[in-house]
Image (cartoon, rainbow, N blue to C red; front, side, top):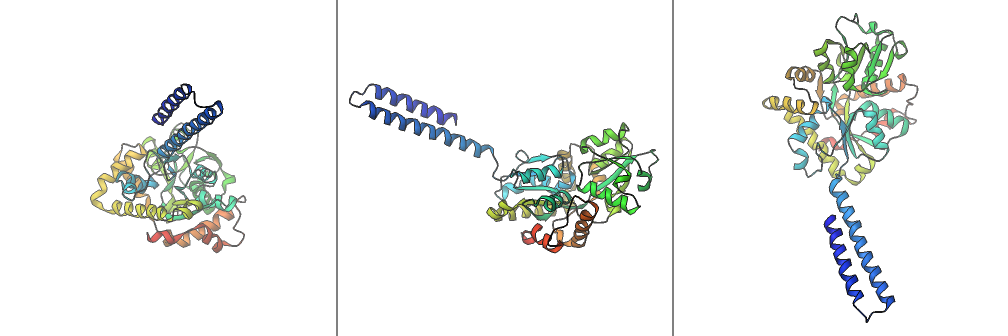
Amino acid sequence: MIYIILCHYLFFSIHIKLLRGTKLLTSKVKAIIITAIIAIASSGVILGVIFLQNLVSPSIRFGALSGDLHHLPLFVALENDYFAEEGLDVSSENIVWFPNGNEVMVAFEAGALDVSYLGLAPAMAHKLTLNASIRIISGVNVNGSAIIVKEGSGINTILDLLNKKIAVPSLNNMQDFILQIALTQVGLSTENVSRLVLSVGNMENSLESNQIDAFVAWEPFNAKATNIGGKYLSKSSEIWLNHPCCIIAASLSFLKNNPTKAQKIVRVHKRALEWMVNTSNHADLINVAKKYTGIISNSIIETALVNIGYVYNYTAFQLEIERFYDDLTNFNSNIPAWSSGRDAFFQEFFEDSYLNA
């Protein structure tokens, strides 16, 4: 852009000098010519700005949760250049990394995102409450969360959480929902505990310093807490086996204008999953997980991975998704059921045509 501006500056300066030295032109003609020169120069600056914006802004505004091992297929795809091989402008540098799924949905609703990895819970909650303009185009994982407490805390069952302080990453996200189910299964509710919202990165220290009694997080933050005396009170798979968790969502406008790109994104995701299940890639997989989570311990990553099931075909877990919808709307008075029914909602919310990408 600087080059463009300098060129137009020189162009402008030269022509002004020429005009000053020309006696044959009237003042009116000179004014017209000068105005034209300025217009041309200005258009060049504007084009330069547009060029720079296109240069620094990715063609796909992509989001994900920071340090979330549930998003390991995304990390694998980035490291193996799968997006680039599909001609997609997605890299770790231009991905927007969010602390939780609710903030992802706020970005979607502001029109600032095209595609993102996030939890099904905030996506569905925002769709039901605000009719967010998104659709789910792929599954990402099942299970993968846990309720963590301190060793020696006297908390050995879910019932022992009565009147305890429990941190969740966000209200109405998947971890909060898992907590609600766990409490309901033993006759308790969220009214019987003290819930507070805390970033997953701060949960471990808060537990260690006794500021909280328990937390619910995604991996690898659960496995990481075992290094400071934390323990798994209950894995989410023990609370609800094969519960849906993370998904890939896309804005309606992106799907309308870029169906081929959406198809390629799902294809990249599936390719990453195929690479992950190849045992010969396991050592490299651990290194990718360590790079994107910042965890240097192989054992922590291994412990965390055991708790996660990676998928793409969410329709294989249709019964779990239906239960999720029912419980989400029943447990939360502020999340209404879809006015035309659950089946109509699923038709509006899920787009399974990309699963065969």
